[in-house]
Each structure stands twice: as C-alpha cells, then as structure tokens.
Length: 259
Image 1 (cartoon, rainbow, N blue to C red):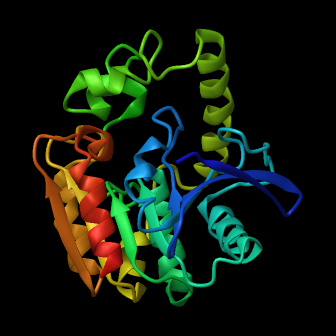
Image 2 (image 1 turned 90 degrees about the vertical axis):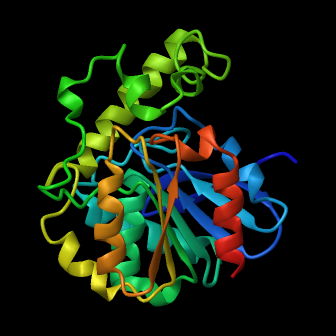
C-alpha cells in the first residue's frame, strides 16, 4: 500500500500531508524532525485512514516564518483538520507532536476521538528532565533516539533509510529553523501545560519506551495522573523511537484507537 500525497493551503502556507489506509481517520503529528519518516503508519493502514502532515517548515511543507510558538501550531492544525474534512479524527502525536497534540486536546478535545501521546515533550517537569540537546553531539544523537542504536542509525548518513548527505543536511538545517520558530517563546515546553492537562476530555494512551534517553519514561505517570481518562503503555527495551524499535507498539496503538 502506497502513501498518497495531499496538499492544503493553510493561511497561505502550502502544507503537504501523506495519507495511507482506509477506515476511521487518524491525524498523526511528527516530532522535532522528520528523519525517521512515516513508514510506521503502514501498521495502522489496514484499520485506519492515517493522515501525516509535515509541520510548516518541515519535510515537504513550505516555510511559515510567521509561526512564533506552539499556540500558532495548535491553530494551524485545527484549521488543517477542517481543510481535510476529517470530522472527529483520532489524534496521535510523538515527542514535539505529542506536546502539540496535548495542547490541541486541552483547548479543543471535543474535535477529536481518542488521543495517543507517544513520549510527548512539553511538560518540562523539574523532577524528570529531558535531555539537553545543546550537550548532545551528532555522533551521540542516535543513542538518545533508540535503545537499539542500529535502529536509529538507519536514518542517519550511511544508513539504509537515509537520503544522500546533501539532502539530509539541507533537511536538518531547514527543520532546525522551523523548530526554532515553534520554540521561540517558551522553549521545549510551556510552563502551564501541566495545569491544562486536566481539561483533556479524550480517552488517552500515554506510550513510552522504558529506555528513552531523550524524554524519560518517569514522566509517563505524571502525564497519566493529570489527564482524567488516561492509561499508560510502557515499552520494554525501547527508546524514544519505540514505534520503530518494536512494531508491536503500533499494533497496540491501533487496538487502543479501535476501542
């Protein structure tokens, strides 16, 4: 089954969305980079129609220099849901996309069905600090993304699923600038996010690899305790890329979404 490519104009920004499968709609939001791709969504395509937008300035989507914080992305994605005519889709977010999905559900949870937060960023809990990206050199980064480093290395230069070096470097530069726009106001999180989580009305699954060095799995119960209808899935021997390390995670997410 091949991915389709859809394009939408959202506030003057050309946004590219990959779509696959058939069934109830799932909007899936990627993290702070697109290097791991979206092949994982094939694991849901037999039960769901999965929509995978590139955030403005990421992947194949055009730049959006007017974006100056996560709140801009919340409005952007709500408008994207309307433009795609998705009705009341399930919402899935990984890392940065998990933070994005959590804020969307806190302000407009009635627009969505079930919610999956996969190692979400954004909470900035002082007792469970995330990795300091400024201290992680390029050679060490794969070890922060996957417990099985060979899985992460597939997406880096020399790996089987990495584009040519010049394309890889250009993508990282482009996406780094777009990420900087989103983080411009509060950095990798919002000081009041923890206060907002109780507003999320959706049945929620919090997914975390127990060996995640980027966002510690010790955050999982904090999220689950603050979201009224939440449960956790802790993935053994997996890191930040738990869906790529263990395909059974995608199956479990599908089972949750299916109810």
